[in-house]
View 1: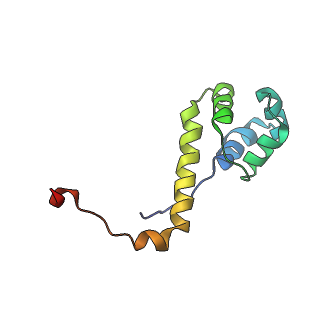
View 2: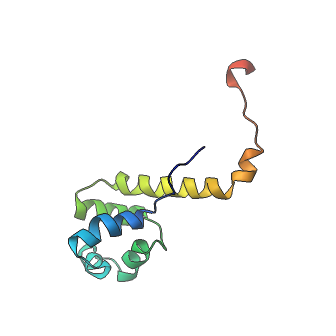
View 3: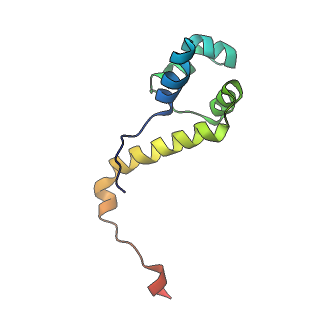
Length: 101
């Protein structure tokens, strides 16, 4: 798996594509979402992951889908884990299903 771009945390997208252009603080968004301020602050500073609960709330407030937020998180998690496991994964040989039958 070759990655050209570094993994992008959903918090970066939240911060750079939503909060900054709207001139909105994490605290103001947290109030709109009815969640603790620290939840949005930690997400926006890339210290926490998007949970299903947060994805549903972000989708509602920004007129996106919960899958948009969850897919970003899953993609980030997979890319980060692939980097951590690179040496281990390189040692695993593939099985050719077509010739196994």
